[in-house]
Length: 593
Image (cartoon, rainbow, N blue to C red; front, top):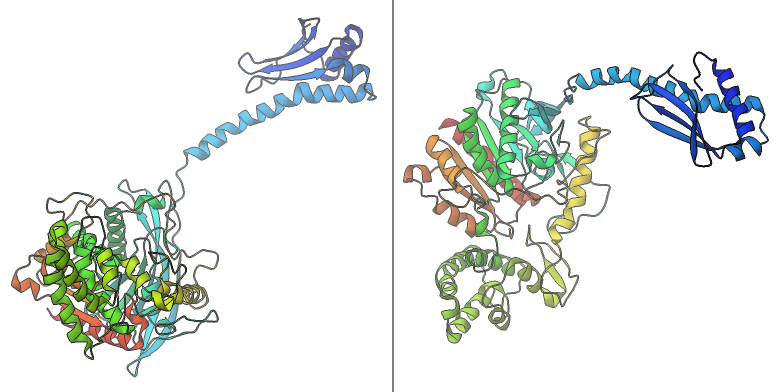
């Protein structure tokens, strides 16, 4: 039964009349765009009977609606008008909806064809002043994100930084510029930013637990703004920095990926702010020192940016020197003087000497001679030799001779942290061994946490989150990530530069630093060592710097400094003042080279 030009109301009446007289079991309403028609048919005793076709509004796809005709028509209390309306809805509305979808498709295609909007950079500029050494220094704080692009020129990330620039400088070529960042990998710059040489500093308890909020943020008399402008940088996935467009944060999580993104940021920053002719410095902490070595070399090779100096705060350029891998004895050797300093500080030595410096010199000598020789013998070391070395090692580390013999003369860091003050129920700190906290498990072999980290982290994080929003006027509706959320992703340790025929995955950037210093013979390097740092022990750093293979004229460009604190030596007031003085002198000297 063809509907022809039958009106919709008449069409529905015809269907209802058929339903009442024939009483089919089921009614189907079928529409199909492929044939541009709609069919209403019934099924009676297994036989399909076509009732009518409609071709007024082709549907965009095939579909079918089924009604139980008997229950609907014969048993329903609804009247004829209601069912006419229902049939109209079922038979006609799908066409209207599908037709509307088809009409909107061109608009959707046009929208899809439009290029994606470029992510917007954000910035907040505020004016301030601070007093340093009795001198009032006006400065501008710029909290901002800068767009980074991939190799195809597509938006890839927004990198956040906080820049402090003196605003009364007329000749920028005479004004140094320093880029600062922490390590991790995967750490924001909150630690250097709120603890070291920025205009503001959070006040924490020295070698103790800082109480909960409210925390105090004060003007920093050891700020470096009297010597250099400062740019604190948060790598992608940390702070307010994040990937955009098709990129993901994990695309930047690797040695080379990280270096490449920071190099692009630095090149962009110096271009936008007319700082190409300013003396330039990198100040990195922990893994940030590893980054700096590779970054210095990359900036020279890729961007023709030649640095004046690099400051390595708690340095590690070869992760093999601090990784306690099976069969690798170097870390055990390099940790002995740091263990000795820690045992001396906590007064667990049987015969504690008065002169710490002389004691550490003895520890260095023992570690690199008698102890190293014993470890190199491996399984060939006799029982008497082992007992003799254990006795000497106990004198320096404060650990029992029996314990050392059971450990085969090899005590890794988590074991030392747990064992040194076990009898006192205390776990020793890692980042700063002066810190100690209650032990979770007195029977445990390894330390389960770092007391230094838990003692001060809350203060640093809360202080920055408050400061950046209240004073810098940035990030009101954003979340600041203190550390990258790696999840199931891992840092890519493969590195193409400076391997010197090593495996690509070997975490070592010594060759990068050497390459940078050879290509730029006036490049100066200052190393800041905390004697209570159990994360990057100072003997490992000394060994690294002594084995770079540099000519004598370049070896003179490396300067070592020491502090009576740990990884973050600036949490101790006396060492912060010393750190500021050393870096200030280093910058002045490097600029004159």
